[in-house]
Image 1 (cartoon, rainbow, N blue to C red):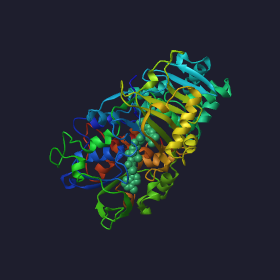
Image 2: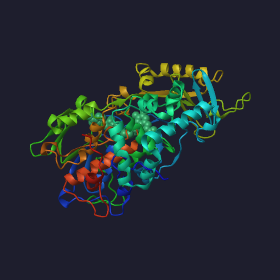
Image 3: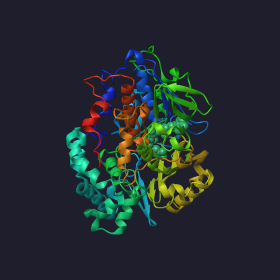
Image 4: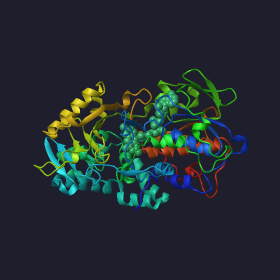
Length: 546
Ligand SMILES: Cc1cc2nc3c(=O)[nH]c(=O)nc-3n(C[C@H](O)[C@H](O)[C@H](O)COP(=O)(O)OP(=O)(O)OC[C@H]3O[C@@H](n4cnc5c(N)ncnc54)[C@H](O)[C@@H]3O)c2cc1C
């Protein structure tokens, strides 16, 4: 089965659409050079900008902070060693994202997730008990019971094998036949409810649920997601976001930076060799401070220095709360229902702390135990997930001491980097007594709490029960035929607008929706043999809840 993020809410082959030899569409001559403001230089903004430039529009990118948004690869001073502060592991099923990474010729490798060959070894430390494993087979029976119970729960609660098969087959009718009733059943129920009420877990102990929450499947602890709508989790499972993940060698920030400087082979209107960077005069504009409808129907975008320009269309990719906190947005640009959706959007918290070390010393075998000195570690202690990045023999390597979400992220929110490192080292000291991590640290540690970043206010969306209607409204906003004129021409895209938040593919796909919307808004057309999201939405768009 070859999996991709083909739906399940809107089963559209974005990867085929952007790779089609005919191109994604065309703008009329009169729309060549049309100015499109792109708010945010993250994955969504840069993908939309790149595709619109290829059609002859003039995307103008505004960025309030670091270029690349949540694809932020921190480079340790004086080295080429990086720490991924945002997105770090990219499922092969994220075909849209890989289309652009491949276009740029970026190299990748399997991500060292728990219990994978790339990690080498994994330590699971729960309730003071430590298990050393290379694969699931090495773990005690309870872990197998948990894994089997979740597989069974998925089968019983979500017709899982059939759903995955339909996604692999790219069969929209069959996907909808299975998925739409699931939406009705599970929108208002949590992940925890799904697990606890499942027949598969009923005969098992509370401890099983606890272990499931700490270890979960694929990438590790999922109890932070227990309050989320189950739909969100099912999408991750069904499209294999949580499996077969790779990292980008040299840092994922190369994707937005690379596209910014990439001259497409085929480009309308602009001279061959044109890049987004060149069209933007080499630098993005400052952060957006104000959005207003101009008298002539265009949209006025004012940056934080007071410079105001009019645009034919605007693509908003920043987190939706920016529209109420940082940007003075004219209320009439969105309906009240849309404001409700934008404001109710719930962002999750996430904190990461990294240190650079002199070498991948964890691969040294402990003569007493025959085990690696240190392993990828999942624990109920405050570090939660510790990941090890081997940069090759005798090269500085990296330890993500802690990658945590929600409550575990909030615990460290007011703390500085040194205190965070101390706490993490102390927790790891309990699991690996006698291992001297400190003695290997070089350079300056680095940490982030995404909820503390003024341009983000959170890490990524995590929809709560009852949020499907909001998601639906935001996701479908690129279809503007029935909107009143004063709401047209501004398009939403990005992680928080997607049905698969916390995965960059959602940002890419919603950027492509917005791109299609802008093409239509500017009077453009799509090729009959390469239908766009606009062409397919009425037939295969997300199920409407009453
Ligand atoms: C901790 C963390 C871990 C993650 N892990 C993964 C992973 O392993 N795999 C995966 O696939 N995905 C992961 N993701 C998700 C992925 O990083 C995002 O989906 C993706 O990067 C979002 O892109 P975007 O363009 O939607 O938003 P962003 O990257 O947030 O871009 C929006 C941009 O808007 C800018 N902005 C804000 N306000 C303004 C303003 N007023 N004017 C102008 N610009 C403004 C911001 O500075 C930002 O650059 C992770 C995210 C986080 C935070």
